[in-house]
Length: 266
Image (cartoon, rainbow, N blue to C red):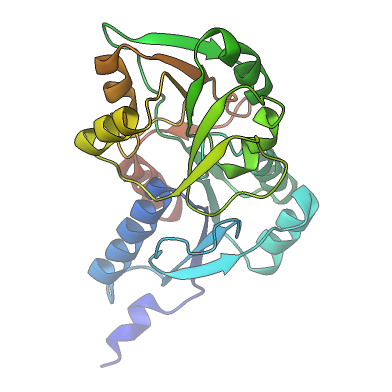
């Protein structure tokens, strides 16, 4: 008896726009689903995660991986069509506004269901001294009045916004080395999260940090820096995240996204 015939048929294809912990977790969940359902499932499931390629050594991702841009919304739409993608998940970083906009446009052009997986932002706790700003440029403008020794955790690509601040000292934490332009007084710490509270306390103390700059990325991997700043009584300049594209369905947890994929693909 040819039991595999029960699963014969075209593969159902999922494209995850990734680069985040949530994207890796979602890919793993979907591949676990595939393993558990075979050979009884209705059709094979093919999961591809797309990475922008901005990090030299990205974390390992389950399943198939593509690296690089698509060439705008039209290029992404063409890729979705050519690869017969059934559902698209935008699980990019909360500040990856351009790719999220392209994803919404591309999904609309080729009529592919789109879900945004976006972890929630951080919430202030008692004792926090947060200064909310709309952009990195606004963050740079706020710094001279708040401190002289800056712990900058907004990533290497945003460094040019602070390059003109010659009177301030910066500690930049980044996965990869930064490129010019950059501040004159800059020390770079190459590291990748997650980070623990003890390490963050020691870092602030050792470098005599008196102000922290961060994007409201959310998540637990880098949250300890906020707790350490709170304990030390330091001000935090927090860049607000851009809004999700209007009308886009959004969930906060990989498990919710996996359930959505199951409901869409049967």
